[in-house]
Image (tube, rainbow, N blue to C red):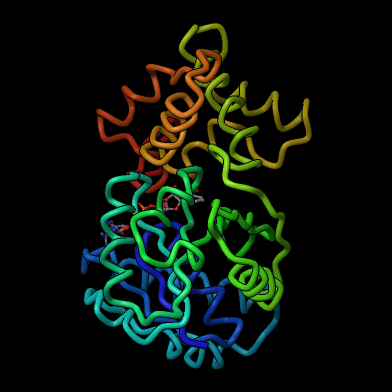
Length: 280
Ligand code: NAD
């Protein structure tokens, strides 16, 4: 099976890495050549870490890397059986990409989105293959996290769904199945919690460190909500939080102004070196 991944950022390079590790041929495409170069270095570094941890022969890393083709040319998706989209969390950007992919890809190609919570049905509707459009929501960091949410749009067919469930199993991950709904399951629960942590920080009653310490030691979370937001990327967090508020119209999901302020200042978390914490 030939696979394509579009967007080589935080998620796209992780998806390409796990697919190539599982033995699939992957074409990783990004419209930014600098991002693509960075993705190659990230995959190299991460594979060395994973192979050493698993006490595997690091000489075999070359074989995994060779299964990934890096390109800025989207027409290379022409021959792929499955394309996973992992570009920025913006519905207009994703819709125009889905419409373009629909024209480029062969008729039986399945097009999946790694969106954190945008409508799979809406993405399918801009194509002539809504039955072959589905959500495959990986978690960050992809090589470490064991879950993929599989989201069926209103028109996703049973064969498409079954194919993706089998694929998730073949890469050694677990899936949960969801019908299209804003933010799916995990983020629907996680995002209001992170929002609440940001509101608390804005109120000036507690430090970022103590919020995170509280949730780690008091609720047994592996990572605090503010450190998690920095890891996700504050721009992605903002897009996702806005989706939940806009889609539901429920004021309990209002977006914390401090989140917007950080994004406007270019403080995007780990990927920019600064968010709620500094990473220099
Ligand atoms: P990112 O900003 O790290 O990377 C996005 C990449 O897409 C960039 O390299 C950019 O150059 C590229 N890109 C943008 N438009 C493009 C286009 N039209 N064609 C080709 N490449 C394009 O973003 P990310 O954090 O990897 O998020 C990607 C997707 O995954 C989003 O939908 C996000 O919501 C979702 N997601 C993110 C996380 C997370 O923790 N970051 C977790 C799960 C899902």
